[in-house]
Image (cartoon, rainbow, N blue to C red; front, side, top):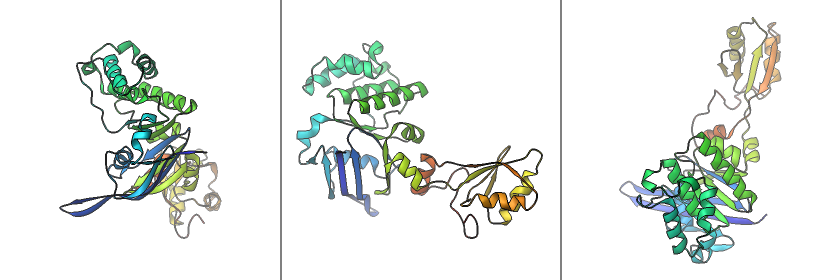
Length: 319
């Protein structure tokens, strides 16, 4: 499949009172045509710096960037018409209506005004399009920003936190819109902190931490490469959970008690759980792997503590 976006060895250095800071430290990324690609990283990891560098707003110190097969920023004027983007919080004139705002942007970009009602319909603002933007909620302003990025019918759409300010219904509508755009052949690069949405909507992801890529690939591949070793254990009714948990802990297990079950966080070999308990005449009624989700992987790769009591196997247990 064709790569719409390629970044290799991207570096950006800032000098300040505390010395040199590497905002990007040899960062690599590839986005394939027709996909929704999630771009993830904690605050300060280099996400926005990457997007601003791609769009020619920041000059990199080193590295190579390609958009639609053309090197940027050198050829950015040639590909700009085929790229729609929202980076950070967009600003609009409050006294203009959404329709006026998009009409002016269409004129400035050489886009036919017939696109204005079309994009207003796409983002769900048709019925509010004649109201002043200053009366809009944050979520509505986000929809207007997405509409402005879609005016040119871009081949590559870059969105930085497009669900910011949206209620659950709006988030679901945005998810549907992203999938529809991808199905039409558009490539979407989506930066978001809502990891559950990324897992639902994206075909592939890149995770950045401290200016470096720490994971990349399809969502399924990234999850499988960092699969959880945790298992959910449920015992027969009336069995002492505390006693069972203590037996496993004495053998080196990491156990988290819940209301009606417990989780063994480092069960590399789940059969060991049933064996140890059966030796004490305690029998398991349920033993279920706890699937890793994108939040688990993200927190682990970016240096945060594991959640839900999950962890890697330890010496002497789970092997």
